View 1 (tube, rainbow, N blue to C red):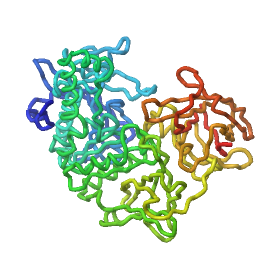
View 2: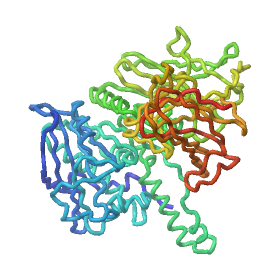
View 3: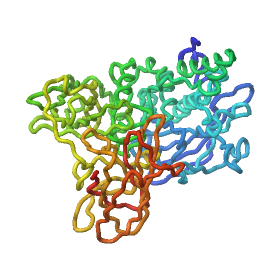
View 4: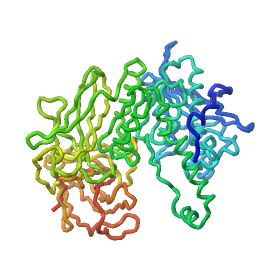
Length: 594
């Protein structure tokens, strides 16, 4: 066991103790935004110095105006000119450092002094990103390069202060000092946010650096489950008597959760905080997220936004919501998470969710929506979220359709205030039958008809649904042949196929009508036991003939083969979702079981 804490870990670090020694490498102006690439010193250890690559962006022609600052943390995208340009155009001075460092996994990749001072390019997600610098880690700190670190991001073998996370956060705190060296930076209005795994860096910086006024995360997690990784050979070591090795590895896990994991920093957060997660994220859940927000010591100024049916990325307008939140916070306008409470009631056989407002904020409510999920499964990532019908004449009362009175229901409310800020409020899971005698709706074999109750979202069979992917693969309503409407997209899917309302037996065939302007190849994926250890993906290929017609496709379980091996679909698994992937957009309707 260990008694290390975040305070103990960072107690001896002063972000201003060492000279930054900045070196401007390149600057240019594009589309009204001034960009500047530079290096500055991270820290010197054993007479060896880390040189941190950084990009800043700000609006052009600001004169002597002071700008709010936003520090962007994303270990996957790193220095991305488009992201920083977005913030500059919103009136911020934006800064981002490179966390990746040298890529030892790439043939011909230069590192050390070979890349110092010159512009290199790198690729992420298969597409070329903006040209950027690489942070130079000295000999002995190769574990900070992402190509090395990603082999075991939870490694604390040599102590919490000798991990990639410590160094990445240290460099980020030094980036705050670098930002404050500019006259245009307002030291009283500094925000930080992390995307995906960048949330760990943002959380550590927000909690430990008093110069940060507000923090946020997008599509990350606030709570990592403490599940032991000591399995397989390590378990055999324990059984065979190699207790010393086993205890050392166990201590390493304790160090990670005590001083590195995001939840270990929550109690030290005293500033406003914002998070946005997909309701079907594999790493976060609405209930756990709200629980973590209440651990913060920021007077209920930790808010969450739940993106319905999305996974680990959301459309760009969710980032717009973050920008509005930062501006409100920097203008001294508080946004609190205790403004609304939700409750469920049964009246005349109908189930309603009601929202009671205890605090007026944001200029009043402009729009409100309740989403709910009917499921006996505890796996959050495979839930189907349904938009509830608002009761006519009632701004905050919603009717839920129930098909089985004993199936547990979870629900949350998304509110958009008149100041443009959106936030979410959740409620405990409830069982409808416990509220009274419930009138049930008849179940159906229809998953989708026309474009009504569209529960499809951008999705691919891997579940990797980044914000870039979501923006590039919109799902919408469109007309096909003969003016018939359906759901349109090129990569889209739904968990509605496993909803409590759907009737299906082993002999059922899956039927669908598809319109495609041009001939193309279509892959249909069935997602079984999604989010569980025995998760499996099955695929069935189809050829779309194209033209002004609707093509009917009828498939059975026997048509689907395991993606990895081609083996037939096994019995006993639980069907959770369906996903369609094609090169070009197509229109889908009449998706149902026969």
